Length: 385
Image (tube, rainbow, N blue to C red; front, side):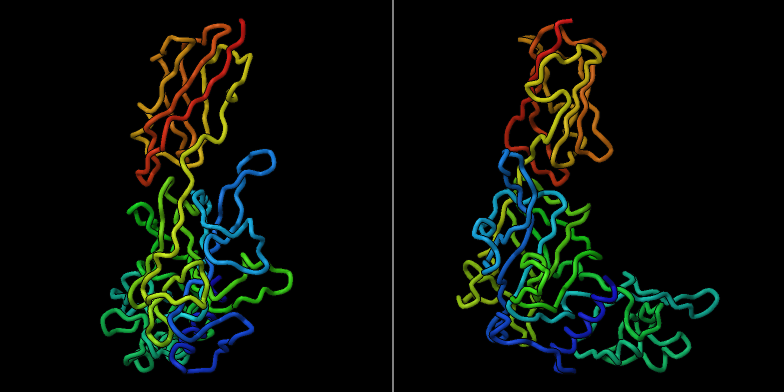
């Protein structure tokens, strides 16, 4: 990803400032460099039932449309995947990459005891910076002070150049990452932390799909947003996107979202409220014993449940009831798995014979503090002996 991001960032910087000629295709590609930059499509994972009723995760256009995507996969979603989610936000023109990504810096030893270290390890790239400016700040340590300076210097600690991380010595940064806070996913008032290393700006691409590719994976230019913790999102939450004021096109115009993702429809710069989505609710994905199972062994008295989201540990001990026939049992204890998405209930007393056991979960909360919308029940019949 580093080499791809490096070349894309250089082109985006240059294109935004007219430093070099980067192709910005016109009409046949579906790009619209005039007017405000518009969100044209949003690709994300949604949970939907298959022919057997089993929920499956698949890519949809949750905003906008494309001629190569079937109608059933073009719709706003109220069941967006809360796990392994990646959101692809496609625009109708190129944005200024300087406001979206920063480049990796190195540690430079100034003496045996003193080092030059950029506090975050990454540096923003000033507007007007060219690939030559980056190369000057990627120079060997003994040449940095003479080459890396001025308004377009990068990877500085104060006024001292620390140097661009360039271990392959090709004159450009070895890695980039998304700048924190420039693009945000907000769900029910909770900001979803992004994996800044796996999120990136892809200035390449347009509305034409290359041979062998799909529209869902290739439309561009695009922001690819990957939440932390393997793409984890809050459950049962209304979500939207937010952009910093300096995320603009090369004319300094802010992003907007036209109704339905139609680039021919006007929208106000800075207003992206036309795009929203909702995530899936907390749900039990499987259990042992199975729901409605019969002939369940009486001992050991163990009930394991598996869920689509990890839980806040403090909500687990008091989140359940176990009823044997009509008699509540209070001798079960709950253990949460290390991953947080499995709850096992155990008791040293066997189940009664030929009895329906009903387990009800309430008040579970995911790690974002979002509660389950209602009780979830599991029932099974024990063996006769």
